[in-house]
Length: 428
Image 1: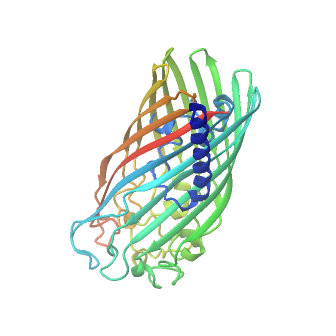
Image 2: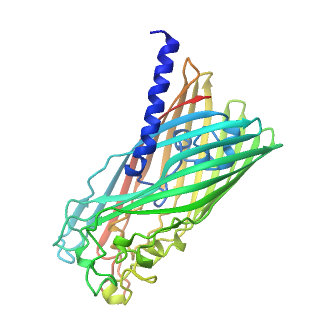
C-alpha cells in the first residue's frame, strides 16, 4: 500500500472514530477539574492549562471561544482524554453508623472524547460544530457512606455539549456565536438515609431511581481582536443553560430536580513573545452560586435545619462562584514539533461546613500543571498529546460551634487527578 493510500485509510478510520465519539459521547463519563467543569477543551488547549480565549488552535476552538473558528481554518479534529481522578473520604470518627477510616472511590478511569469540524465558507466566514463533555462528577465508594445500611453510595453526572457555530472576521476582529445543545444524565444510589419525610419533601424520588436525562439550550458568544502584530485579546460569554428537571431525583436536588448549567465568562490574551513562542493567559468566572441545587447550603441535616431536600430552598452542596486563572506557553521546537506547558488555578467551591453532602461531589483540587506536544506528520496531518496533573488537595470538615449535628463533621475530603489525552487532526 502506498503512503497516500495509507494516509487516506488512516483518515477514514479516524472519521469513523469521530462519528463513534458523537454517538458514544452521552454514554461517557466526563469528570472535571474546575469545580465540575473541564480545565480546558481540545487536547492542544489542555496541554496549555486550558487557555484558548485568545488562542484558537484547532476545530475545538468553539468550545472555548466561538470567534476562534474563523482563525482556525477548515479542519477536523478528534481527541480523547483518559481521565484518572482519585477521590478519598475520611471519617475522623464513627458517625451515623459509618466506621472511622479512609474510603476511596472506585471507578478511577474515564474516557472523555471530543470532536470538532470547521469549514471556511469564505475567507472571512466559518461554520462548524463541536461535540465535547463540558463537565461532570462521579463517585463510587463500594460501601454506604451515609449510614451503615443501604446500597453502595454512588453518583454520576455527565454533560454533553453539541455546539453548531458560526464565526465572522471583520478587519482584525473576529466574532462568533454557538448554540449549545446540551444533554446531561444523573444517577444516585445509596442515599436511603435521606429518603424519608424528615429529610426530603418528595419521598421516593431521592435515590436508586436509575439514570435520568435532562436536556436544554443555551448560547455562547465570543470575540478576538489582534490589537498589535504580537498581541491578541479575547472575550467570551456563555449563558446560563436552562435544563429540564431530573424528575426522578426531585427529592434530592433543589428546585424539584433542577440542575441548570451556570453562566460563565472570561477574558484572554495571547502574546507572541518570539516568532516561535506564544504565551497566553485566560481569566474565567463560573457562577455556580446562581444554581440552587449546587449552591444552597448543606451545612445542617435537613431534619435539623428545617430545609428538606427538594424544594427551591432545599439543602444542596454549598458551592460558591469560582474564578479560574489559566496560563499556557507553546514553543515551535522544530518545523514539525510544537511543545506546550501550562498551569491552571481555581479555588475549590466547597467550604468546610459542607463536606458531608459533598461526599457525592468532592471537587477539592485547585492547582493543575499540564504538558503537551503536536507532531506534524508527513501528510500534514497532526498528532497531539497532553498530560494534566492536579495536585492532591483536601478539606477538613468542621462543626458550626452550636453543638448541632453538622454536615461538615466529621468528614474530610481529598482528591488528586491525572489525565492523558491524544488527538488527531487534519486540514480540509
